[in-house]
Amino acid sequence: GIQVEQSPPDLILQEGANSTLRCNFSDSVNNLQWFHQNPWGQLINLFYIPSGTKQNGRLSATTVATERYSLLYISSSQTTDSGVYFCAVDGYGGSQGNLIFGKGTKLSVKP
Amino acid sequence: DAGVIQSPRHEVTEMGQEVTLRCKPISGHNSLFWYRQTMMRGLELLIYFNNNVPIDDSGMPEDRFSAKMPNASFSTLKIQPSEPRDSAVYFCASSFFPGELFFGEGSRLTVL
Image 1: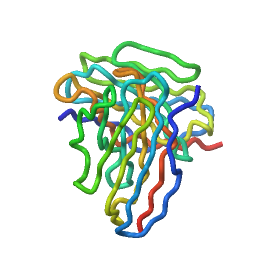
Image 2 (image 1 turned 90 degrees about the vertical axis):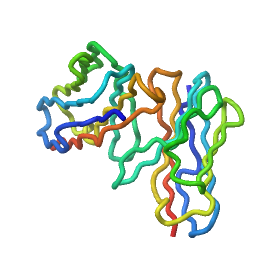
Image 3 (image 1 turned 180 degrees about the vertical axis):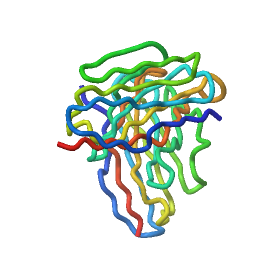
Image 4 (image 1 turned 45 degrees about the vertical axis):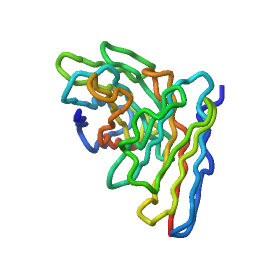
């Protein structure tokens, strides 16, 4: 099945810094989403982005489907950005509903 | 609009007992997913339904687990009998497939 790798696994930032999180996947995808799991365990959908670029406030994401990667940019980070960021993909082949999650990037933003 | 609603939020039970987790998806969504999250295995898809029909249950750990979706607004995940290794957070999620996936707040299960 499709493999999803996220990097870095852990990231510590000072408030106000920028960061880039990466998601690599091993096969063509028709569905790629980024999620944030906050310290209370809630999973929030950030972007549905199988290709192209989207922006939402201080967050933006880019997926280059032909090169099989996606990037999540966080600018001017705040302590509320802390948590785990997951990338999830759903390949073209096989069961298209099976959204495969990466292991996540754990982000800690220090005041 | 109400999000995905799960109950109970927390469940503590003893080994061998039956556990039933419940989920109400977002109105209008046609797909419903049950995930399990543990430290060791991360987020795993257990089963998903499309238009109330189970499409892929290959992630269900074993026969002790079963899931139903009797109508578009309700689903259950049942574990019988429960075991300590079933302790995890169980998430329900829904989408208008293949669009954005929205998660409930999860049900934290502890089996003693």
